[in-house]
Image 1 (spheres, rainbow, N blue to C red):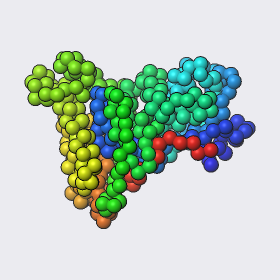
Image 2 (image 1 turned 90 degrees about the horizontal axis):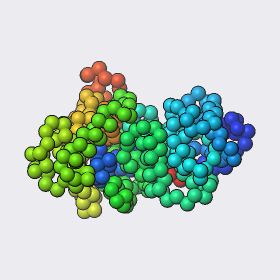
Image 3 (image 1 turned 135 degrees about the vertical axis):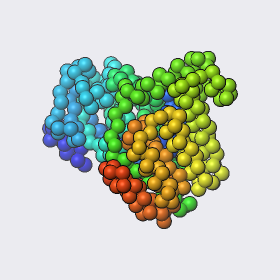
Image 4 (image 1 turned 120 degrees about the vertical axis):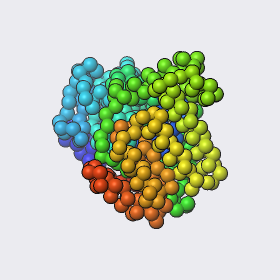
Length: 370
């Protein structure tokens, strides 16, 4: 294993544990997690593998195969910067339960595709430390700790979805998560038996929304909830009345969040009824809402969605935080080449960088590999 070899070369011994945590794709339920709403992500085969040996002192040594390849040594949490903040943030949240560690990281999440490499990094490290120190934390507790590291240490005000998907997902399933109660269940999603595939369309537009537009959207939602006198937009029950009391961006954001929660529940209803082929219309509606009401799409995402549908996809939408990253398309298996050709041609016509296509296999959540 490459990460183990790198660990041995850097630190002169084998790691005591190696854990893998996956990235995720969100089938539906976008920007609802920090509004206490519903989400339906699934884990993907790509992720982050962390090889770790605890240390008795407070020293942290970090090596990433995607960075310089040389170990970074820190005597305190405050010395971290860049990508190391995601790892050191996890150690900081664990506090006195852990000391230092020698860590090597290897990741294969396509960078910038919006598949949540940061959550995979956090959850892989948290899971390994939990295992090595016998802390007894549940997968959801590890997800919450990882989210807190990203919120409080990195400064990215993300919701719980990415970390929960990385920690809790099961192979062949999507994870239905209530982001308020943290109740969850894995829901079977057998597309192949219906002749369907999920195609990830990476726009190759790399997004960075930490502290910027993402935080602005969250603040707008929180302001709208205060004006409506509810704990979160998830609690809006009379949408028409709520919209009459709001204006501008807050009105739009509320429209998206409330209707998106309904779409998640409707999609789960279709899956339970075995109507997998019918979920495409909900994906389309989600994209239009993200484009027009939440205003987090981009020209590249819009073209990908429109061209995929034109090429024969049953439905498509942007996935992730937005402003770039990826779209997903629900495609009959015999139309995959046509859909890819349609999107590629549409990009070429507009002078966009060629997109990248990835098969969306529903993978397992965090697990020990050595």
